[in-house]
Picture 1: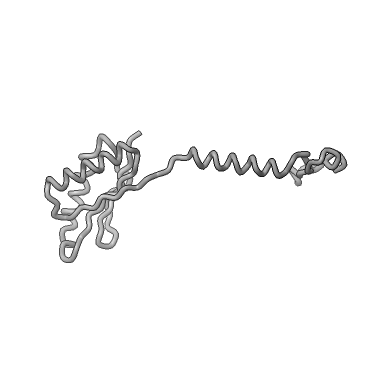
Picture 2 (picture 1 turned 90 degrees about the vertical axis):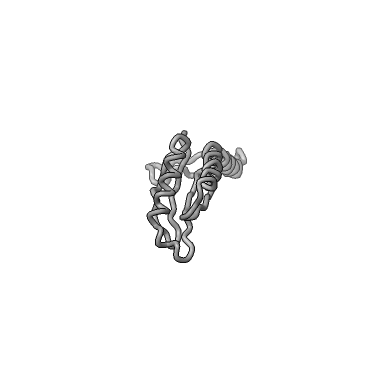
Length: 135
């Protein structure tokens, strides 16, 4: 402690359970600042996952399907995940098989751009599938 006081620094206990306890003489405020700076740098470098959503209907036409498909291709090429869902309104819920066929066809068309992360599953009035981009 005398050495730390003479130098105008702090005595920091590194390993309290060791025998004898390990301590280090450092400027504690500077140490905290550097730790914060490192955490910020790590956070900035981490990849941010973007999730884009595309909504289809159970009775979608070929032109509309291809239009949505081109948007999904662009999203996947930009590195974003794509959440494709078929929304069933009113009595169209009886066409669940149609919705699943549409989603599987969508996944098949996007096979060269991405792969299916979650297969089609029903959540309330929606059938949802997630496609992630290929590396």
